[in-house]
Image (cartoon, rainbow, N blue to C red; front, side, top):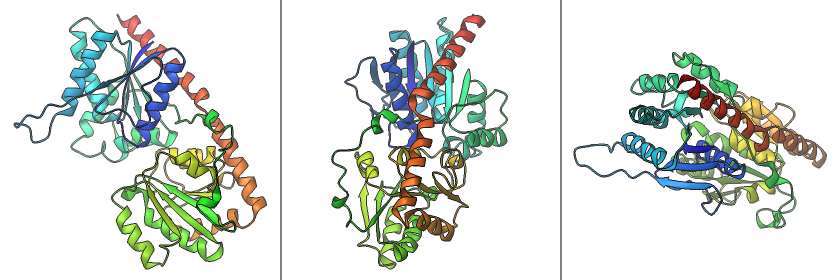
Length: 379
């Protein structure tokens, strides 16, 4: 198949998943065209069957905000015409599904039927999409997609509750390439980050308010009083400065390492003993899955899709949002001795294998064939 993928090119989960999916599809001999405003951060262009088309938005003084959705829909039309694209897969409802629908209508006038698969990832539904300004457009775009998927059952239920949806939603979970974790890192040297007697705890996010990173610091403070440990904070965002100040007030500045956005996430996770994700909302919890694939148990909230990934009492523990006391106690249970930690590490890795990319990509391929078959039947 010739597939066009539209996504955000940033470090966010939707962009990472879209890039991994496209790369896997290319390895399965599909021709994959990424269409967005910048090369996705995890996209390797030096790979067979992968193409990138940049969306340029011309500055025009009449517009207070430049119309990216208009530029994207026009670019989609051009790429479909030039490369004979058979299917469009858009990730994140705003503005990609809306731009995809507009491209479909323009192509129809030229006798081209382009089926569209829309994948819902989270804040495009629960936060941005539910805003009164955007809600009618999001509802329309979802209902006019040929196939709609969500990354968790929790997100599917949220979508059905928040919007007037008249189409079915297929749950296709996020995934991870477990072959990347089949061998231990040869340079997984814990001594670079901590003393031998210390446990290593990690948090990874874009540090927006929904991630509750001050809760991460609070949980770590309670753990560090009982168990010698250090905390590695990976990522950057609007809440980082306030959390750093909070950590200083608690006297933790020497025990927390703020490393910013990193391209060595797997290397950091390979020597991590415990991962913290106390988010207010997570539609899936891709960061938790990445940790588990690195044999790292997870302490998380029980919101959204997290319980579908982090199995309470098996791969880690889940607690109510904001319950830092319970989260810290559960973390101490895991970290208190090597045997308990080893059991949780093994269980986390085993659970992660259920989300291996080689089990998930065929589900998307089946939906692609269904969308194309339906298109041909309607011709």
